[in-house]
Structure formats: C-alpha cells, structure tokens
Amino acid sequence: MKWKKRIILWIVASLSLQCLGLFYVNHYFLATDSKVVTKKFAYDKSEKLKNNDIIVPANAENILVSYDAKYLSYYQNEKLEIVDCKDGKIKDIKEEDGTKISFSEWLPDRNRMLLVEKKSDTESNLVLYSYDVSKGEKVKIKELDWVGTNSKVEDIQVSPLTGVTYVKVLTGDKSSNIYRIDRMGDMTKASTISNFVGNIASVRHEDKLVYEELAYNKIYATGHNEPISVKDAEKLTLIGERFIRFF
Amino acid sequence: MKKIKKSRKTKRSTSILVLLFIIFELAFTAITGPFMLYYGPFKNVKSTVVGAAMTTYTLQWLATSFISDEKIKQIMSEQTVDVIAQDNLNGVDSGVKVKNKNDNSIERYDVTGKKFKGYLLVVNDPTRLKVGYSSKLGKEGEITSDIAKDNNAIAAINGGAFTDKVSGSLSTGTGANPAGVIMANGKIVYDGMKNENQKRESVAFTKSGKLLVGSYSTKELKSFGVTEAVSFGPAMIVNGRKTITKGDGGWGIAPRTCIAQRKDGAILLLVIDGRELKSIGATLKEAQDVLYEYGAYNATNLDGGSSSTMFYDDEIINDPCGSLGERSVPSIIYVEKR
Image (cartoon, rainbow over all chains, first blue to last red; front, side, top):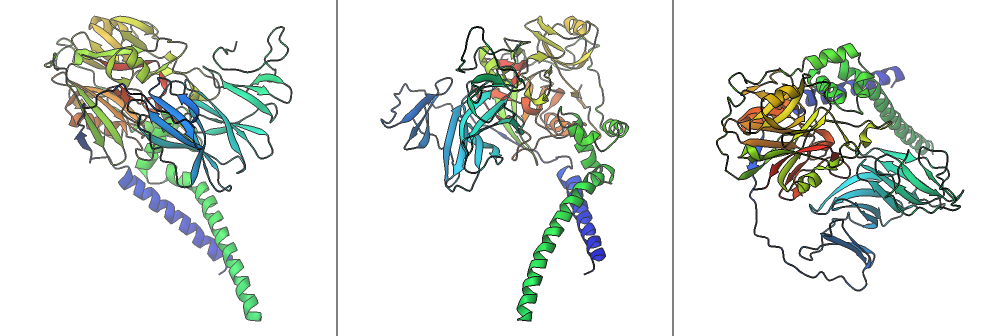
C-alpha cells in the first residue's frame, strides 16, 4: 500500500476513534444521572467490647502498636500480621498472589499502614499501598517503577498534615533514591545533595524532608543547599521529626 | 530458499508497520484530541472538563493551555447556578418548621449512582448541628475524625473553606488557614471578611435550628440569631426551588460534601466519593438532585475534593480520595451526641 494512502487511513482511524469515544462520553456517560438508588443502612449494635488478652507468638518480630493501640502488627516467619486488639482476630491483608510485603509502616495519627509489596520474581516493581486497617481496605498508591527491580524500600516517612509520603529506596548499587508522593498520588524524585542518605525525617507543616547526608556527614533539608548547623556541635545525627521548624 | 527469505522479511516488516501504526495513532490522537475536545461538537464533555479543571487548584492548565480565557468564561457562564435568596422577609424561621426537636434518631442511607457512591445521614433534630474547628487554627488543620472526637460528636462532615498559602505545590496544604468566617457556639472564632457588611456564601444555623444558605454578611448572620457558621457555597436548593436547572453546575465531577434541611427541620448530610475507580464523583446538579429527592427545602454545597469526609459512630464511613485517607481541614459540621 502506498504510504500516502496508508497515512490517510491511519488519520481516519484515529479521528473516528476519538469521535466514537467522545460521543459515548458525551451522550451516555455524562448524561445527567437520573438513576440513583438509595438503600437504608441497618446498624448491628450487638457487638460488645470484651477485655481480652492478645497473644503474640513467641517468634514474632518487629512488634508495633497503632497510634491508639486498637491494632498490633508484627512479622511472623517474614509474613506481616495485623491483629485487631478488640477481639484478637488477625486481619486479612489481601496480598496479591505471589507477593511479599517487604516494608510496612504505621501512620502516626490514624489506623492506616503503608505497605510495600514485591512480587517474588525479581523482575517486577515495588508497589506502594495504603491499607485502611479498620475498614480492611487496601488501595494502591503508586507503582515505584522509577527504581530498578533490584531495589528495596529502606524507610518511609509520612507527614500527615501536608499529606506527603517520602519513600527511601536502596538501589542495586547501594545508592539511595528518595521519592516524594503527595496526597493526589503524584510522584517526584526528591533531590538530595548526593545519593548516600542515612536517616530521614519529614517536616510537620511543610513539604520538606530532613536527611542525613552520608557523603559529607552533615544534615540537610530538601530545597536548601546549606547544611543544618547547631552551635558548637560537630557531628549531628537525625533522630526524629518532632522539633524541626524552619525560620 | 528464496520463498523462506521473503516470508521472514514480510514478517519483520509487518511488525515494524504495526509499531509505526501504534506510535502514529498515539501521537496523532494526543495532538488532535484536545482540539476535538475543546473545539468539537461534544458540548457536555467540553463543559465538564473545563468546569472540572477550573475548579481545582492544580489542573487549571488542562483548560487554559488550549482555550482562551474568554472562551473559558463563556463556557463556565453557560453552567451558571441561579442565585435565589432565602425568604427571610417573614422572619428567618419561615418556610421551615422544626418539628422533631427531641427526636434523637439518625438514619443512614447508601446512595449509588451511575458513576458515584455516596452516603446520606438524616438527622431529625437540627439543633444538634454545631461547627467544630481545629484547636490550632492558623498553624495546623486537623482531620475531621479528630475534631469530631474532640467534640464528642456522633456524626460529622468536613466543613468550610480554607486557603493554604504554601509556596510551590498546592496539594500539600495543612488546612491551617480558614477562609470566610467560622462561628461556633454564638462566637466568631475566625473572621476573614473585609468588614461586617461583606457578603459571602454561608452555611449557618440559627439557635432554633434553621439552616441558612446563600450569601450573608456577618452582620446579617448575627441579626438572624446565627450561632454556628462556616463559609461555602453555592446554594443548590433555596425555598424549595433548585438553583441548577441548566448545565451541571459548572464544577465538573468530583467528590462532594453537602448539607440540606427539609421542611420539617430535619438535616440531610451528604458525602459523595470521587476520584476513585469505584466512584468517579458527582456534578453539583447530581448532588442537588439527590438532596431534592430526599425532600430538601434548602441545600448548599460544602468543601469537596480531597476534603470530603463523613464520620459516623466512631468511624469514617466514606472513602476520602487522598493517598493517606482523610486530609486535615480547619472546620467541620458535627452532630452532638445525645
């Protein structure tokens, strides 16, 4: 087939697909919603709170409690278990087939965990999920497809007020990349002075990250080129984010 | 020998052809698509996309990069919401007679539309509705469930307007700074109005439980005996009449939080989930129509988007669309526990 004819055919194909798509959306999808169904919700108030003891297995590791102690989490045989302290039942995290939870972190002010799942085969990406523990609902936030498949998540710091999540990923060549994901799900790479980063901490009111710069042995904040200095202190170590404020 | 060589050659050239086809289609569609959308005959899609883009903080470029501001204005004006003022001439309590003052029941309904899921609470005694606010106004907002728990509320929805003066990204605000006015328990807790005569779309309750919607100045609110108020709009049903009769309201499709009052005084709280696979969102018109079906006599829109939250019986019953769940806000409207 001659190229001129071919191109014309391709243009027609694209235009007709666009028309079809827009027509469907215009006339069916966006037509004012006349069919709205409502159903009364019946409440089941029969549950009574019992004061039970929660038994944690002896080989459980990394035992953590949620912010209001309504839930417990621990790893048993490298598998993450979340326990409902109301009745001792273990929640079903609904992991995807063939994946393992390689990292988990409780949010500091709500019963929600950030989970990083990785498929057993080394060719697939790390996926970040947000798990609402009380509802038992897992929502995918982002597939971390900017990092090589040979990477692992070392740390996650969350700032619930600004809605920003910072994920520190250790890549195959032992360098750290930090990814910033905002509440709308947009991901950007945080620029740090070098790729050798130690502890990180998020700032409470601002969209900034404080990090230990291992190449220069100093503490920096994203967006600033000068390290943070404390008078008369030679070496600083980053412990936490409670008292960080910028002037 | 020659035949085999030829068939291998055609196989390879076919796959190259398919690849070129796909690349061409994608590129061509990406270039001509926006023009089809904004300059084509598909009015509904165009006005929905423009309305949705212009009423967000971060996505306005979707419209402004392709059409002139004048055209945007024209499209948005075709979607106007009528302005009807509440009938307060015969006293602020006219039209609505609070009948169920001591009825402590709350009913919950799940609402399912073609492209959204929502939750409706019917609170029979309107005098239970109060305004709650962050304990650190100006510095930090708080999540709806925390403000609700601090006020011992049985139910709550997110409330009024706020601005987040954050440089750079607009989606990382902390909900610290309210806009308009916040009044709670008869006292003005935050006043961002220029003066007491400046009108702003309000959501307010008088001492007797009448819901005020539409534009009011703080002077007027005080004169009507308002004890609880936040600022938001537009008013969608006033004196029993819908204000959105043509178009979809002009705010696109998004999560919604709305409040309404029936003629017998009962309050309707509506939250519609959005920006998610299982619930894309609702237009203002769709929210208005749901409330109208439930007998709303006066109704208004509150802050939607990532703020839309409904708290009932110690849990968040909707799915706020932020990646971490609820977002921090400066004010809420809650229902006192009785």
